[in-house]
Image (cartoon, rainbow, N blue to C red):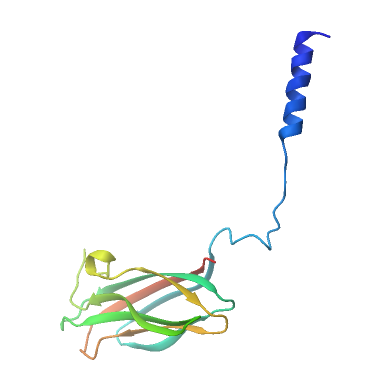
Length: 158
């Protein structure tokens, strides 16, 4: 037998014996990409009372990415506070102040921004199936003014 032919048979045989394949059942594998559960966008000049953002269909981890900004400034210097509440395996949690913005803030710093301001823009929480995840925007009874916008996206991550 020709040496090149023997080498080709050896290589093909080695590859065939060492290559394996398997399939993954999508139903049993973890979520591949976060699923968007809810999106929120509101522009307001008054407080928002406690409102259901979403009701968890299944127990799991949810990521809430939020943004709070002034679009028309006020004059009081009072804050608008974005708060979240939910129920995990231990019970009711919150309200947790996720974001805060002063009604006097103007561009280029008219938004609530992460750790520099002492507030975060993303919250990861565990919600129990059948329970509501709620939010509110309040002014700490300080008579904040102006127009603010709140945007949020909720993703199921586990």
